[in-house]
Image (cartoon, rainbow, N blue to C red; front, side, top):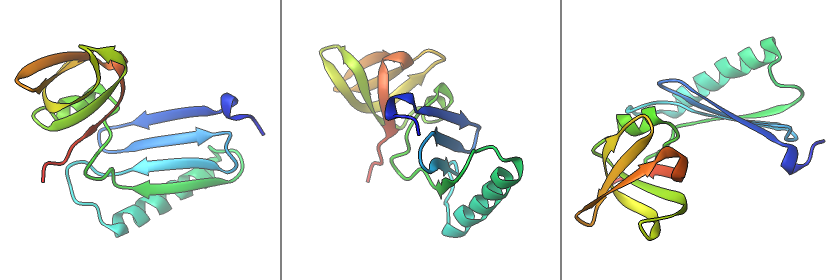
Length: 144
């Protein structure tokens, strides 16, 4: 078995789903987040789980055993790609940077612009430009 430092992680995306695969785990872990802007029911997760499991078993994509988790992204949906950010322009987001910029690492405001290489967040009557490579993690913030 490989050490944690040797683990291989990969993420695949399409317009509706996120797939996160952690390989070289015992067992391998696969997380599929389904749904975009619609209500997800437990039956949806069950159906997708059966479909993915069948494909993985037949195609033998994963060596050995694996754990498959299918879920909705939830109300605090993580944002991974420029496409995600573009889809949620006008929404409240939280971004944590790898290193401080503008004297801070955390930004919680309205996503006003999302381009191919950077975003703009409005907060505290100011706008902050952040490049995707500066962002450690980001997610939507649900306004109650």
